[in-house]
Image 1: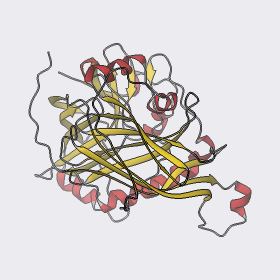
Image 2: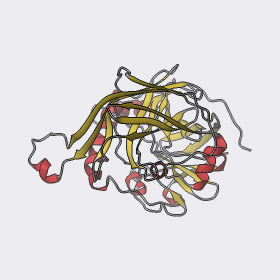
Image 3: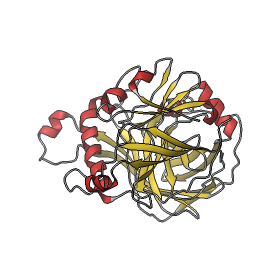
Image 4: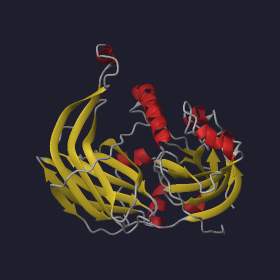
Length: 379
């Protein structure tokens, strides 16, 4: 049996340097990945893999509520998976079983209609640290080709929470069985166990957008936006509901390598949807100097990828939100990663890291093997 420990949960904040670097990287990824935007990485039998460089939309703005749906829900069994959600989270049958085992999923059916457009909170998946909220949208023309659905403004708040470390929204496509367009929110809240807390979701104006073609962009001024809104329905949709989910977690003290030879992994706390890890740097003064470098700062490469499971399956569990902060002694950092999928805690064999410089090749490798990773077995 793996021993559990109590680990100090440090505050986590995203620095301006990291945000700046993230925006630059995000823009580069969008440019390089545009032609492959609608492709999915096909998982080989021994690998459950997610595309770690996918497009996501990030926005955060408070809006007033005009239409309101208030839910009181309970975690239930017989969770009805939407096919687009399965595809987005790369869910296997064993991961469906893990959702049931840990009581992570709740199926909801509450809807609000504004100006002919109905938005419904369909499903919630959450544990103590991380959440997924699946929305259904009806009443607006389906996006086609490289078009997608989004909201002009949105706000997600958890009553009693502190600061959102990250919330991401993504259009998943149309569910063939119900005919609903599906939109997925995922994220985390700082320094609280979110299970049992009330979530408030408020969205404004449904939009359908498209990419300009290369020919169209060639005729535009340098720096022009590569997209345009082709349809918009005004309205506001507001919901309140309780996040009922699982609160299981495993914690370990370690002394293991990472993807960076200068950084040692000290401890981890793992839930079915996320991981918190603490690490130290061999040269803290150099670490701080590198972080504050005005040209190439904000870099603390750990190379976390995911897990080797007890059955030999490799799961990429690093496509959700991520953030971190220096520890109190400023000798290393405490990092947080949302998996973007579901992991069965008691089937984890090892944590996997990618050596610096190999990340792009490994993420794009069709069938990575254990030899591609730095492997840290759990006690």
